[in-house]
Structures are given as structure tokens and as C-alpha cells.
Picture 1 (cartoon, rainbow, N blue to C red):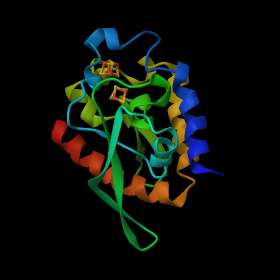
Picture 2 (tube, rainbow, N blue to C red):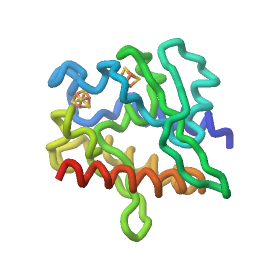
Picture 3 (cartoon, protein in one colour):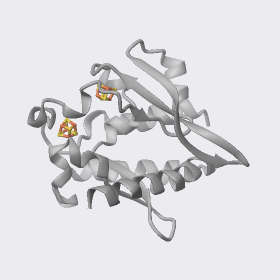
Length: 171
Ligand code: SF4
Ligand code: SF4
């Protein structure tokens, strides 16, 4: 199946499902959309969405974040915006924030509050049951599906180690 099509279908799961049943951007004046320099990692294959849609509000570069797949070192693309986007085209990382996928010690896909969110997002201190159930279910469903792909799983192994670094930092 065409990877661009897969991501576009996944995006639709988050057109209406949001972290809480309210406009959380009003809590923080959209702290996660301030157009700073941090950027959003794109998951393997997701760049094809932007090669297809060609939006003018996003800039995509190769990041320093790398992982090994199929005997090769791959660089994860990172997207930058200026704080404004087309909501229906925003990257998956933006759609699932402040949650993030994670691999457990036994290699299973799980979802956690992104440790990087603690510095910016008022929702980061919520317990899992305080999040909208459909939102959490859709994040889990998305990554259970995506991680069936070997390249996404390879990315996730490295991404989990990267997130662990932040977990330690925020302890
Ligand atoms: S920082 Fe958190 S609360 Fe604010 S808009 Fe982003 S996800 Fe919502
Ligand atoms: S792409 Fe959109 S949702 Fe993502 S950080 Fe930029 S403005 Fe916010």
C-alpha cells in the first residue's frame, strides 16, 4: 500500500480526536505551536505526504537523529513551521502531542506522555485517564499499525532510547 495514503488515512483519526474534550490551545495560547526551532520529527515514510501535498508552511530537513535499518544509517526528517499550518495537513507528531509512542523493555508498542512536553504543555501532568479516550485509543491504534512496518519499528527502537534520555532529564 502507498505509504503516503497510509499516513493520510491515519491523519484522519486525529481530525476530531484531540487530547482533551476542549480546545487545549486556550489553556496555553498554543505553546506547542510557537514556531520555535525545535521542529517535529517525521515518522518513516511520512515525508512522502509533504512531497505529495507540497504545503508552503512547512520546511523539512534531515535531522541529526539517526537509526539503522536494512544495514544502512537513516536520518529522520524533521519538519519546521512558523507557528501556522493547515490543521488537516499537520504532521503526526503534532496530532498526537503531548503523547508519544514508546517501546517497552519487551519490545511492545506503548504510548506515554512525551517527556519533552513537560516543559511546555499543561496537559503533560495529567494522568492517562484524564485524556480523551478516543484520542488515546487512536494513538495506540496508529502505532500498533505503523510498527508492523520494519522500518518504523527500527526507528522506534532508537526513538525510545532518545526519549529515555529525556525521561532521565526530567526525573
Ligand atoms: S501545549 Fe499542550 S495544551 Fe497547549 S495546545 Fe499544545 S497540546 Fe494543547
Ligand atoms: S505544524 Fe501546525 S500543529 Fe504542528 S507545530 Fe506547526 S503550527 Fe503547530
